[in-house]
Image 1 (cartoon, rainbow, N blue to C red):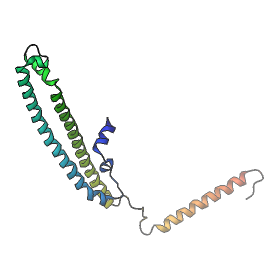
Image 2 (cartoon, one colour):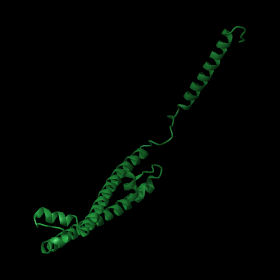
Image 3 (cartoon, rainbow, N blue to C red):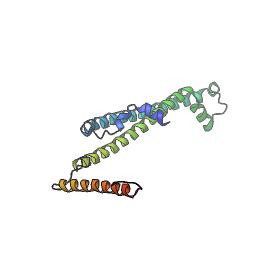
Image 4 (tube, rainbow, N blue to C red):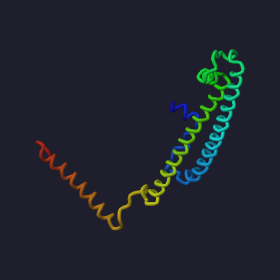
Length: 175
């Protein structure tokens, strides 16, 4: 089901943040929100049209069934029988299927807009991290380079001393 929804929405890259190209991500963010927002509005408009069409088809079928119930396989014109004949009619089913597809598309677009909102928050936080030099190279404070060098020399000296001691402890070992 998730793969079907992904295929229907299209470009998965719209929802992934490239943290190494924050400028590009920011540049396309508002355009993406606009595009998905306009499509969401258009689908909602289509849903309203389909609801109206469904109501008209329902009313027309009801009129036809009440005039000639036998043509629709209805024996008694009770409310449940009328409703059953209406919802099982091919014309009604076609409109209903279109309505369900439009509602599904609207829900997917709504989820996409939520995802883009989350992406915007992620971009804001990545920019904050970038501005606070979170992703910068580690730098030693000024004046500590000599101390680091001295520590490295001492570590090398200790390793060499341990090697000499191990050799000296071995039988027939040399110093």
